[in-house]
Length: 250
Image (cartoon, rainbow, N blue to C red; front, side, top):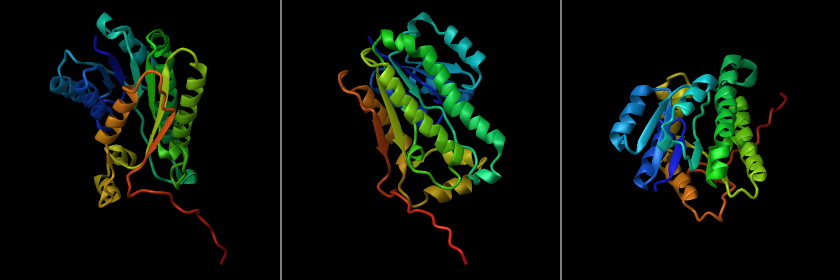
């Protein structure tokens, strides 16, 4: 019987690439997101018998509960949760940042992630399943303007390790995937739709692709069940570590 992966944020980027990769490997996918037209297109592309879509805003707890409660019986046995949905908003220093943007990042990257995980954990324990959480190198390496986004991803990393500890003995595997530069809609969203800013960031950098990260997730998910990847940090070869900042007196 085909295994089932529940993938959040599947309307673009890494989430959509993951849906394609897992379906190609014989999995069934439950794909979630806010943009109905993109979910419909994904189901049409991959097959409605292989992709079940759920359209809701992941920060809306009631909508999430309703969507999960309405899952057909054949889609309720979930073997893998991929917590991919997340975003960064703004590049300003903390003292100039928009507080509403901070709240949105926390609601999406932290609150929604833990709410969905909590909801699905009993079934994952029953099926000796797995959780893959998408964190970021920003969880480890701070940079100007990263403030709350980096903080949320540090939470995801630590939450993943905490889950791993709590799930000891259950057979459930937990992995934190922590990518560096990946060319998706991420920067366009972060800059409020500034495509030029996104193009400038990735130009000539040979960044990772959504497909790279999706392939990594599939590799982690299909390892023998006695192996657990705790944390996996990835960067393109073109990206490495920045130096420290020093403010000098005149």
